[in-house]
Length: 73
Image 1 (tube, rainbow, N blue to C red):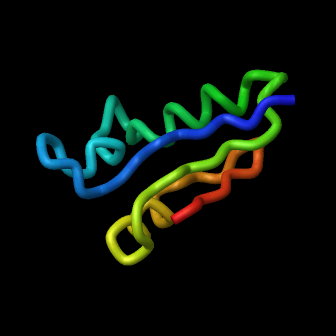
Image 2 (cartoon, helix red, strand yellow; image 1 turned 90 degrees about the horizontal axis):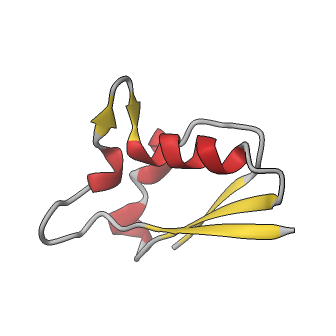
Image 3 (cartoon, rainbow, N blue to C red; image 1 turned 135 degrees about the horizontal axis):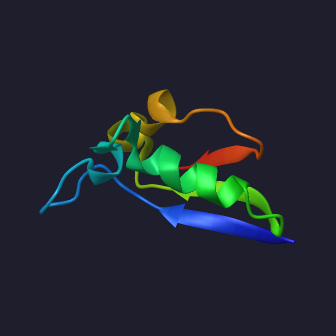
């Protein structure tokens, strides 16, 4: 089984909070996690961010899906 790691952080200098931008009705991070949850070989999804006080905003935007999503600060 595979663990998918998504690198994201809120403090990007060129496009801050880019993972929260919407395409249609969903934000980018939910589109990515939904696609990964449909892959049978992916067991876990891990969001790897920077320090907690700057990146805790992502926790509010993650929608539950089939696979467990963990956030590492």
